[in-house]
Length: 419
Image 1 (spheres, one colour):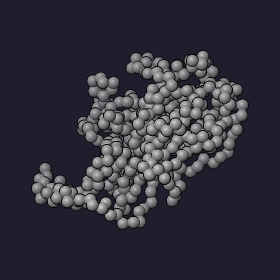
Image 2 (cartoon, rainbow, N blue to C red):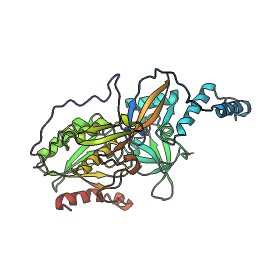
Image 3 (spheres, helix red, strand yellow):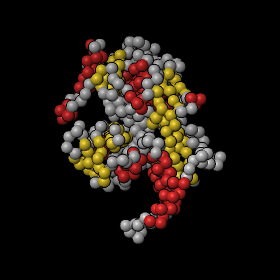
Image 4 (cartoon, helix red, strand yellow):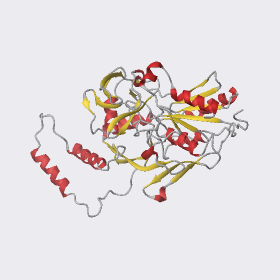
């Protein structure tokens, strides 16, 4: 029996959105759910915090020469010839453009300025009321890339896969685009369509048309296989996950088996607190789950297990990961692996582990800034390296076409034979 000491805690799941308190979410690939849940808010790859309004006046750094900026502004105003008479740029739009340029100069895809319209889109994504195609996107090797389509969403049903490179959106090149700008192009009203030009595995680019819909974020499902292996497929670390994962763990214990697979493939992430909550079922009190590494070391913080630790050493646990596993998935998998609780099988994860904080700039604009990086218990940077599996198993196009799942097959073999 896998859980001889299973204790059912009645701990209240912490509220993830509390008024006047800091909200933290891991937004996978970018605040990727800024990502494109097609716009959807990307829960997934990065941490997300909401800062209060600044009270001090904003002053430029001492010694900064703004002469070139002023000169460029004046030259544009005097000499720019617009293509149409209606293409005039307002002074406000020029200010917004200047701030966008400053943010972009830091070379971080997740540090982004939101002018009024984009700020509203971002906030609607955070609230979860969005329509789109249901996939998380990020930048990999300077190319817009699909981190993961969410199960059952239009993107998933259209055949879009983790690792697909998006070369064009509705015929417009994505070269140099940010994830937030891509999200704006992908989002749209339910029933409308968006066309992607996709490159997959260095093959010939092809087009995929996807009809937008209201995105309902999936959570998990379970399966007790005939060979005695229990599988929990976790699709996101959203606010519903703690209770549903607890129910799944109870179902696993009641099954009488000691062989468990937690499938995080294609899981783009979610809330940090949820990753900590779920990892705590397997770890003793106080064990490090993830650390936040800030530029100012005095702000560094460590998130530790709540200590549910309900399983004995008899538990046999495999976690499946792939290039679509990001942010909260990487935190969860990294913690259980490095504490010796799980064997990781599959492919190296996406590598999305940064914390963004949103600061108000004006009443209707904001600036999202990367303020910290996630580190696994042994100090590995998730953003730089991703999570490498203990046993690497690739899935080929032939496997997909024939419906074969070599990664799950390898996990089952490992749990049954021990090797």
